[in-house]
Image (cartoon, rainbow, N blue to C red; front, side, top):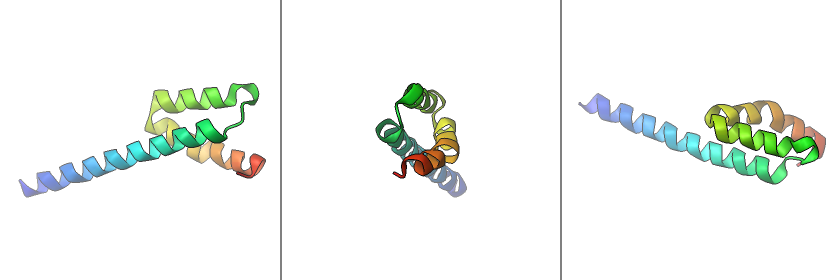
Amino acid sequence: MIGFSYVFILLALIGILSFIFWIWILIDCAKNETDIGNTRLIWVAIIVLTFIVGAFLYYLIRRPKRLLELGE
C-alpha cells in the first residue's frame, strides 16, 4: 500500500509540473511570438490542442528560433 501512495504522489507532482509548464509556454507564446503570418495564432492553437506535446514542441523547436530572431 505504501508503494502505491508514492507512485500516486509522484504522478500527481508530474501532472502539476506539466500543467505549470504548459501555462508558462502558452503565456510566453501569446505574449512574445510575432504576429507575422499568423504564427502566434497557429502556435497557440497547437499548444492548446495538444497540451504538453505542443508545449514541448514549441519549447524545443520554435522558441529558440524566436529568441535568435527577436532577442527576447
